[in-house]
Image (cartoon, rainbow, N blue to C red; front, side, top):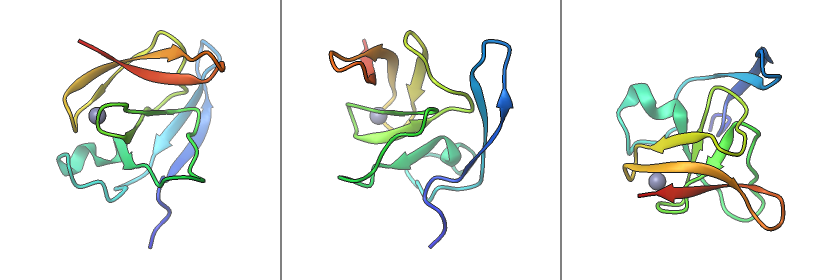
Length: 100
Ligand SMILES: [Zn+2]
């Protein structure tokens, strides 16, 4: 089995955010092939999110971005067609929230 979340850090943009090159297919087959690298399955306890990843609270998958995510960012989960906004939880953890 290949690495489940292939991404390579490729530098920092003007805002100081880390940028990533998302590599290939993550095996996530619920979206068209060209978009698969932007999603992956959550692997359960022990899994963790990279700085460019957010957990979709609606369909429980991981949405991946080509750059580091910050509070206020908006992302789109194609698997459940939900717009998500990155917020800060009470614990100070970045979490995605559905925007309706
Ligand atoms: Zn979703």
